[in-house]
Image (tube, rainbow, N blue to C red; front, top):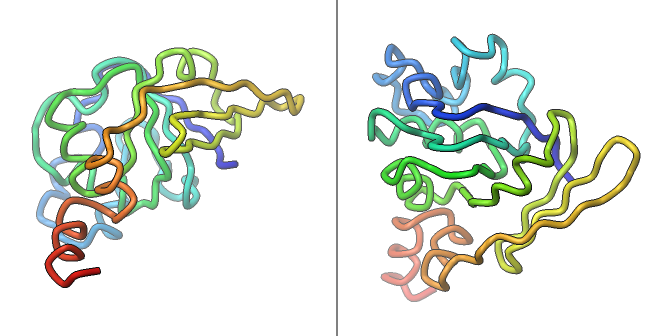
Length: 165
């Protein structure tokens, strides 16, 4: 189970990754700056595999791929949101960053809860401070998108197919 961080509605890509870092190319370096204007020091507090629970229209604004790449570089485990900006969502899937839609889970998650996202079964388990567990279903990904996520993205999947793995 991983720590959950709560974000609001309409978080734009320029807040996920401020524009001055768009010149960086290393995902790990990009990840050092996620949400720094909104939640100073957030990248230092985010641990590998942590889950972001966001409201509606997460990733709106610019369609630059750096914002989801920064979240992946920060080793975000998954994003659970009420909805996504269309291109941001597609960019997440293309780079292998799990982005699921589950409004009920987002409503239930309080920052500091622990959660686990199972991409194969389409289930989110949220554990509260009192050790109570709640289960939420999301629509599982079609097999080809699940393959992208499990292989670390579209390019990795195509490379694996090309070399016959």
